[in-house]
Amino acid sequence: MGFDTVKRFDRIVALLVQLQSKRVVKAQELADRFEVSLRTIYRDIRTLEASGVPIISEAGVGYSIMEGYRLPPVMFTREEAGSFVAAEKLMQKFTDKTLGAYHESAMFKVKSILRGSEKDWVSALETQVTIDPAQVLFNDEVPNALELLFESIAEKKQVFLTYHSLEAQEPSTRYIEPVGLFHENNYWYVIAHCHLRKAYRHFRTDRMLGIQRTERPFQLSHGTLDELRAQKEPENKTKVRILIDRKIARYIGGSKKHYGFISEKSVKDQVEMTFMTTDLENGFARWYLMFGDYAKILEPEHLKTRVNEILEKTKQGLFG
Image (cartoon, rainbow, N blue to C red; front, top):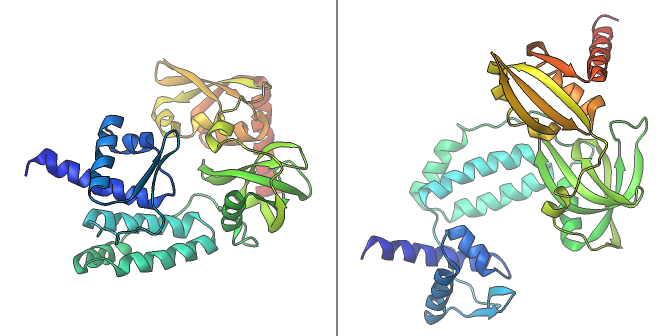
């Protein structure tokens, strides 16, 4: 049996597993995952059909397997089993307690079908891997925030949210229609249509003081998470230019895009960076303080004033 034949066999088995994992799977989705042409996917689907797998295909929709047909799960490789360790550690630290408990229960089921050698592989890694989030991700008073948001998105029902934004003196309440969740810059965010503001808003899970299920259905039809995040940002942006030590510049590469990074150029042993930021007062100013002793503000003057204000308040808190 040639290498190409083995490779195709593995792909067809993996394709069958993916077809069983979703109600409907598009051909392009399969082609993208396996990095092959649509023609190859069509051929592999015909092979599965010839093997007796009852696949239903609908033009413009995708492929699905006839309800009730299931094959036992394929055994995991040692490397796949090892990847569960990282997944379990991430779930323990980066999700709320309820989802973490669900994942722990699921992991026991996964481990129960592993071969002996794979169980030993997982056990050897479990106590040697640890993950600590950089920020507090959830309010302790809302231990099931992600679970309720997942449920709301899937069932298209509003939730009643008590929220304390950074700028507000007091918490506020509102009904929201959650559209999607994403983890960025060390925090979990939900994008939702807010009925109080009558617009889409971003909410951080650590600022949620309460969240309740409701039977209110969504009133709007929402786009995808990617579409909403790609929408044009507000025009009230402020241009910022800073000089930063070259040795430090490389360490902020992963976060600078969140603060409106536009371009950079070398200036001797420093890097001049240009930003267009929508939150100069709090977002950019506080981020700048993380490396401010290695940087210089070129413009605007108001940013210098704001940074000095924050430093003065910090000093008062230390010595006042």
